[in-house]
Image (tube, rainbow, N blue to C red):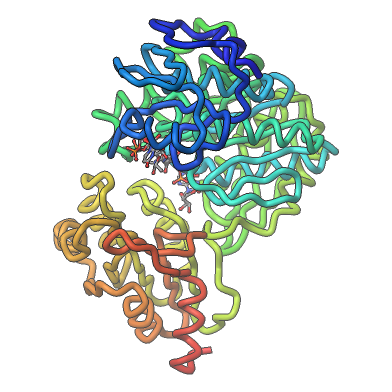
Length: 487
Ligand SMILES: CC(=O)N[C@H]1[C@@H](OP(=O)(O)OP(=O)(O)OC[C@H]2O[C@@H](n3ccc(=O)[nH]c3=O)[C@H](O)[C@@H]2O)O[C@H](CO)[C@@H](O)[C@@H]1O[C@H](C)C(=O)N[C@@H](C)C(=O)N[C@H](CCC(=O)O)C(=O)O
Ligand SMILES: Nc1ncnc2c1ncn2[C@@H]1O[C@H](COP(=O)(O)OP(=O)(O)OP(=O)(O)O)[C@@H](O)[C@H]1O
C-alpha cells in the first residue's frame, strides 16, 4: 500500500519526505519493524516510542508517524496530533476496513465480559454462524485458538485479527472491550453492530482518575454501535448510561432481574453446579438450564440472550447454545478430582466479583468456606483492603497470599489486604508463597468444606519481582493433594 493512501484520513500537521513510498508492514514496536515498515511512535506509560526511531530505521522503517517535533533524516516523517488515534485509522485502512464486513459485538463492563462473550459465541455457533472471539483468555478464529496478550488488542493487532477472521470465512466477532482500549483508542475505527454493558464497580482506579471517568470510558462503546445498545438495568451505572445515551439513534435494549427490563429472568433456581430460569423477551419465553453456577451467570446469560435476540436469532438456538456449555475455564470451575470437599478455581479479582462468587458458593457450604486469594501488584491499590474485608465477611477461613505481585514487595500487598480483613471477625492466615497457601487450605479442609482459590482463574503464571513463573492454581492444587495423599 502507498504511504499516501494510509495518510488519506489523517489530520496531518507536518510531512517531511515522500508519501509515495510502498508500505509493506505497520507497527508500533521498533523491535518488530521489518523492511519497508511504517513505524508509529506511541508515547507510553513506561517509555516513549519516539526514542526508538533510530532502531526502527536500522530494522527497515521507511516512514514514521510522530506527535512530537523530531529532527531525523533518512525516513519520511509525518506529524499528527495524536499517534494512537492515527494508528487506529491507519490500522483500519491497512487491513482494508475489516470490521465493517463482520457483525461485530462489543462487550464492556467490570465483570462478566469473558463469560458473556463465550455464551454469545456458543449461541451464534448453534444458529449456524461462524463467529470469532477476542478476549482475555484467548482469541478464537472459529476453532483455531490464538494466544491473547491482553483483553483488547492494540488497534493494529486488532484490525489484523479481523482481517484474518474474514480470510477464514468468519462472519461475526464477539469481543471484550476494556476501558483501557476505549481510552487508548484501540477500537477507534471499529464498526460495532451491538454494544453490551454488563456492570460497573470500582476497578482500574490506578488508570482512570475516578469511577465517573471509568464509566465515561466504558460509555464510549455505545457511541460506536449501529444496531443496539444492550444495558444491565439492575446496575446503577447502567441506569445512568441509559439516561446519558438515550438521545442516540441506536436503540437500547435492557436486561435485568430486579427492574423492569426488555429481557428478564424469573423463577431462578441455583444449585452448586447449575442455574436455571425462565427467560422472558418481548417475542418469546422459555426455560434455560445452564451448567454454570452463580446468580451472576443469569446476568451474563441475559446479556447473551439480549444480543442474539437483537440479531434475530431464534429461541431454539439460544437455548441450545447456552445449554451445551460445560463451563468457562477458571470461572467457578470445580476441580472434579476432589470428592470429600470441593475445590473451586475462580478469576474473581475485583471486590464485586469476589463478593458475588463468595455469596454464590456460601449457600452450598455444608461445613466451612475456605478462601485463598491475593491482589495484583502495580495495579489499583484501593481494592486490597476492600477485598480483605469481603473475604473475611463471607469466609470461615481466609488464606491471604500472592497474586502477581509484579514489581511490588509481596508482603506489602498482603499487609494492605490484612488491614481490611482484620476489621472483620473472619479468621485468616498470611502465607506469601501461593503454593504453600493452597497446601495449607487443602490440609485444613474437612468433609463438606468448599475451598475457593480466587484471582488467577485460567492464568498459568505468576509475576514475582517482574519475573514470570509458571503457576496454575488447578495443577498446583492437584499436585499438592497428591503429595499429601488427599485424593
Ligand atoms: C496501561 C496500558 O494499557 N499500557 C499499554 C501501553 O504500554 P506502555 O504505555 O507502558 O508502553 P511503553 O512500554 O511505555 O512503550 C511505549 C511505546 O514504545 C514502544 N517501544 C518500546 C521499547 C522499544 O524498544 N521499542 C519500542 O518501539 C512500545 O512498543 C510502545 O508502543 O502501550 C503498549 C503498546 O501500545 C501496550 O502494550 C500496553 O498495554 C500493557 C501490556 C497492559 O498491560 N495493558 C493493560 C493495563 C490493559 O490494557 N488491560 C486491559 C484489560 C483490563 C481489564 O479489564 O482487566 C486490556 O485491554 O488488556
Ligand atoms: N456478571 C457478573 N457480575 C459480577 N461478577 C461476575 C460476573 N460474571 C463473572 N463474575 C465474576 O468475575 C470473574 C471474572 O469474570 P469474567 O472473566 O467473565 O469477567 P471479565 O469482565 O472478563 O474480567 P476481566 O476484565 O478481568 O478479564 C468471574 O470469575 C466471576 O468471579
